Image (cartoon, rainbow, N blue to C red; front, side, top):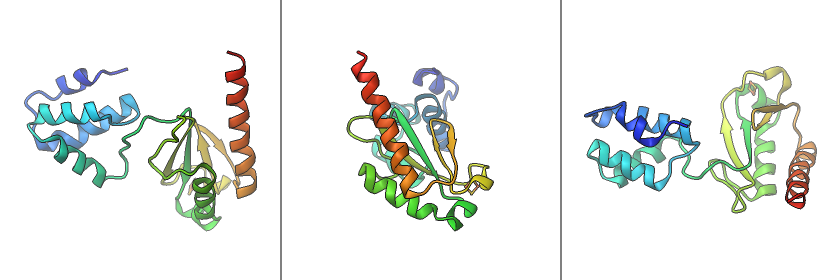
Length: 159
Ligand code: FES
């Protein structure tokens, strides 16, 4: 994993215009922007942490919590929207009591909305840890989530 220091070292003497590229690199390497990362990025660019945080929250591509064990991406592209992805998103939010960009307290699930996943023929699509699930309805969504919970319980039981 690319350390925060390595990323900052690639932007010596950088100013404000490097902020977004740095935030993107850090999120790509670590999956999210930690409080510590935000403070250190601010220190590197001569910006207060509050400013860095303010800019990052403006863009909904950034996350401030680590990814869950099961990272769920709900496609909100046009084809998926037409096939009811909003309903899928609402069910999943209710089911997991989770908002996009957040991670459940037990660290099991994280939720994200994304633009077209490039599999429109399978709409509505949900991608979990990189694996595509086609034609998702609230019903098979519940089965999917229950399956992940069982998988986790079996894994816990094995330890
Ligand atoms: S719109 Fe969802 S995969 Fe293209």
